[in-house]
Amino acid sequence: MWTLFHKFGSPPWLYRLSGAILRWLLPITLLALVAGAVWGLLFTPPDFRQGNSYRIIYIHVPAAVVALAGYYVMAIAGAVSLIWRMKMADIAMRACAPIGAALTFVALVTGSIWGKPTWGTWWVWDARITSMLILFFLYLGVVALYEAYENKALAAKACAVLSLVGTVNIPIIYKSVDWWYSLHQPASIKFTGGSTIDPSMLYPLLFMISAFYCLFVCALLLNMRVEILEREQRTAWVRALATERGGS
Amino acid sequence: MKPASTAAFCFRLLRRQLVLGLRRPVELGNPLLFFAMVVALFPLGLGPAPDTLASFAPGILWIVALLSNLLTSDAVFRSDLEDGSLEQLLLAPQPLYLAALSYVFAQWLLTGFLLGLASPVFALMLGLAPAAIPALAASLLLGTAVLSLVGGIGAALTVGLKRGGMLISLLILPFYMPVLIFGSGAVQAALNGNPTGPFLAILAAFLCLSIALAPMAIAAGLRISIDT
Image (tube, rainbow over all chains, first blue to last red; front, top):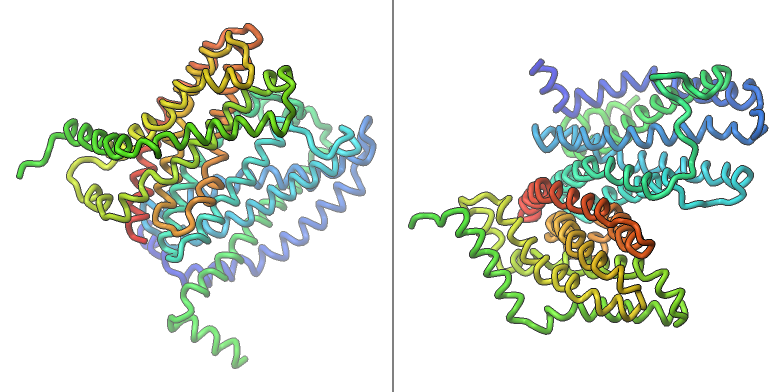
């Protein structure tokens, strides 16, 4: 257990492990994204009321789900780095923020593209849209704080504190905004009780959500690898790696 | 020398902050002046029609309170970091948690508390119905305390940075939103003749939660900032 823990703190080990994981995860993710998109966009029945425009949920819902989960990944990584001072957790936390912001942005944009034909407006101040927007701000706040610090070790600590504060606040923000105004439809996928979405539409959606999770992991690992190389650029193993690549 | 007891330590810290604030009465008036000026901007921007202003008054007053709190939060720790007294505070044997709480409490007494007391005047300027004024004052008194605590986290995290001012707004404003919702909700409820108790109770709950948790985050932030 402890040796594994120490291994996770070791940049070269993590670099090699992430390389090995990406070698098969990256093609699987790309394949799954293409397959899920084709399945969702071409082979599902059109919606009774919305026709074909509903198909954007195959992008919108997975992006939103993973964007929300990403914040918790970031906060957990932040907690690990604060408690055990693990360098790799810093890097993971830092890598989560821009990915999460991008996914939140995708969810907001696809939502408004869908909203135009369906609700007749690009933007409404509805509870869920507003809380997604706030989540976007929270992600950007972490990025902004990280960039403001010169010393990157301190930046990571500060961001870890901020993301933990955010974790306490997110449920409060969500409940307040929910209570404030609600127009968005309630969640259609429930693990307890029946879903209100037909299986022929649900399965491709779940498939796409899993594909987006894989995409998140890939983006996270790729970001982390870049950050590891940048931080460790003066060490022997990175030099060895560079000469080895350059030689071959 | 024997270290001061924790209670005496907090009391002295609070007194020091208050004395420092009260010795500069003009600076003490600045948040109120800011509040009055921004309130004066709204009739200029929205038009002076009393009905429009009165219907927007709860939101306007709360947003202005939020902004003036944000602007004063930025300075809570700055001068003490510059003259080194913050470092002494971190070395003190007394818990930093309570020191952080004392700082924030002093800051609230000098800004949010005064703002809450002065709010009826601003409410009358915007033509808010007198029936809603007690709700406004009560919600501001409770709500600005939460804002000061949350703002303290932002201040602690950015105090070591040169360009803290803009950053603190980006970090902290999302966390202000629930307070804004329930604070202006209380005033709106009073305007519509609904009970304000539930809103104030939720604000009080936010206050309890932030008293318990925010000083921890402030203390962590100060420890990070002292290293920059």
